[in-house]
Length: 450
Ligand code: ADP
Image (tube, rainbow, N blue to C red; front, side, top):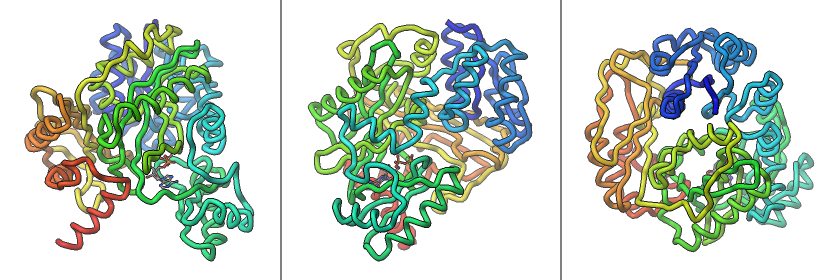
């Protein structure tokens, strides 16, 4: 086991990792930019190192500064959290060259899944169902039109190196193909440094359902069930739940087992998420994330497993030590992402948090790094907390969520809490009948009514 873990992240996820380390008796090193000197993860860590000025490129993405911080503090492993360097294969390789463990999969697996075209090809090889589309990258408009004709319009052009819901364009008709192809290519080149794009069938009313997996790189692989992340705005998740209201037990078991088998076969090491679109009873792989996800707590609530502790154990060389039959699922969990944003316009609202009161009680978990008197810096993601609620049934979970949201007070900055309070009034949300477009349509409908 590791003696000291450096947490290469900030905000709620840095705290989340710190908590797991502390329970395992591992010392923690926080790193921070000058803008984050008073952040909670810095205050709670055993040691902290300032790694640069506010822009992420100069601090949280600054590999030489992170290496120096490891050196100075004697950390023997790095947990990257999510975002920042969590899916940077080169970072994982560099740490290995310095005999520091990366708490995540191998650089090779990160690289393989980071290229969405290769990821899709690998998934197909491993027996995972994929979205129909081009076999590889497409650059010729004529070829693009032919592929689209074969699979049928509408199609979606996607950047091979895309992420964060960016680098995608829907094409409805043949006449738009050439321009759309060129725009997506140049946008992808500018945003991700890689202009390669591929084409897939655009699914009209899918749900986003993902499977959490764990592998030990030594032949062990399990799935921890699915999460439904269909409530999205601009392809970004807003609310996640486990289990999915759309699946029955045999569908869950079938897709879960396919994923667990693939992970074992790949000798994948660590936590990962295999993402699917789900429509008319069929699953279509879209990508695999080789890191901890923002929404991992809903899986923890229904399995009782600490995913960060599992990541740490696996990275230190342990085998899983349990098999699929040892994992059981109980109840229902929902996570709401609380952002410092206006709940209607989604304009960021950084600044001084004058007062915070977080909800509590049975089945309520809040993962958040803010406190009364904390100043939210304008430089980073606007996620300031996650409210995670557990119930024996989905219904109990919804009632508890309504109660917990009512208790949650954040003064001084705007937050997305009012959005969730409104959503709980919607029959479709209560019934669990929503697809990936539901939230955008709801926002259009309710803002034009105001
Ligand atoms: P990213 O890596 O940017 O998150 P994904 O490939 O995971 O990109 O897609 C993000 C979201 O974009 C999906 O959850 C879905 O809402 C939408 N999307 C992606 N591919 C398709 C598709 N083939 N048809 C319809 N929607 C899609």
